[in-house]
Length: 199
Length: 199
Image (tube, chains in turn cyan, purple):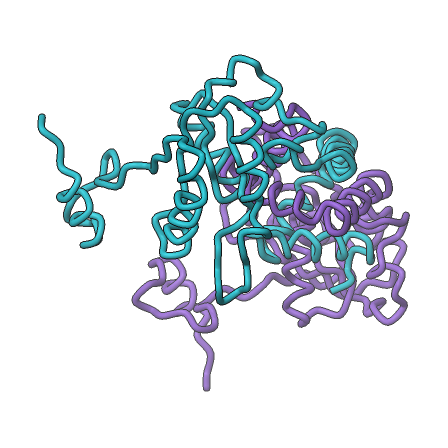
């Protein structure tokens, strides 16, 4: 299809490669943007160019940000002595939406995987050890996925942190809020039963 | 949430307002783009800026394009004497994907609607009449939606074209290819029965 000129076709093809989009949704978005080309489209293009130029990893925690240090690491109120270790930035954002954690983060950038040859040096684990030596950290919370790779990574980090004397905790496993037992997998029910609490 | 700086948040919020996207898919796309900020993101920003600046309506048919005249109207092979009238550019693109029509188009830009006060002057209908007077047109195909507004518009255009002597046709109505009778609405079945063909 070259019914609207090469540039518009290329834009649609590029948009269609974004995660969660396809040719149909990309066409719909591009048509919408072309209708608002003077306003929303020019603004979005400018913003995207800016972020492409300025986005980088926070030198302390690995969060993505437009400055050398991210707003969370910059915020003195968040120097609570707790570090929450997450696999990637999407998980950091998810934790922030929960509004339950008020300390700082450490983004690993992946999970340990013998298969994919991802070792501790690839995962910002040395930087985590440095931070514990330098900052005044009392507790490290491992908010890693409840998958085999996530739990392998959690186990490795817990071992590596043992000599430092810092308290290492993990997220509780159990029934999600609003979760119906009938729809839960067996592993979750078993974990929730093992970790049962007195009411 | 301002965990990654204002610019990234604004980009996510702007993306989330695009049709078919929401906060979750916008975050996913922005994170993906930030990972590829030097390549795909900078390229997409540049393309989008270019299209925002250059996209306009084809002066002949109303298709969106990066030049004054769209590639279809520029193509001499498509001067077949047939004009296909469509409601909007999305419909033009849909027709092109079908690869069945080899003539030129005329984009109305909407449907007639007494309720929304959209009259013939708002719909590039006068321009259609001009084209029929100027170009050597034998047939006008009304590829309009099978809705009340689409059919009202088709009826109006057919009346307006009657004095010109040009042949006016409409798309056939019937069972879609691959359509199962069991899932079709009653109106479509009735229309397909009325328009039954000898095999």
